[in-house]
Length: 116
Length: 114
Image (cartoon, rainbow over all chains, first blue to last red; front, side):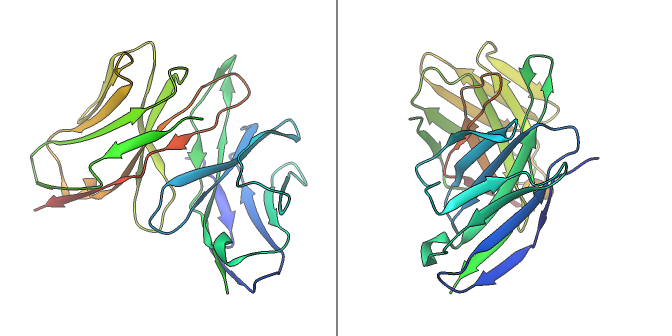
């Protein structure tokens, strides 16, 4: 069964450093998402992406965050200058459409980001 | 924006008994309600979903009910098994073509006691 993959599984970085989290969505999916989950808390929407542009973003997704689809398979989340409060599990998700119907989102296993 | 509340936060049931998790949502425009199961160290996995034009949906031991008037929906797991132990999240979204932002509940840690 096709699945969303994410790398790395765990990233440790120092405050102020840039990080790039990578995702490979399911191959025929065209809608991509990033969510984050701070330890013990709910999963929170960050951004949705379609046709090489952001469809919607949350208030969490400020100027320090950016997303990119650099090639036909990868979808990345960049945090320019990490803060302690960026420590969380980051999930990538993707979905497809059947005709005009948007299908369910499939989640990757996540990248645990630790900012020290 | 949408707000989803979920109860209980923890739930322990004897193996073979039923488990019920309840969620409420605030935005009457929400039209899609998925349930995700998250096992330790893994991403959320969709187990069942329901759209606003349906009141109930069942898939083997799992069922979901939706009350649009009251803006609440529930997950029912019957004949629980040890492998049902996980954290369960409800979510809500306004499913438009080309965009979907899931708003999650706070999660329920379900423990099945053998």
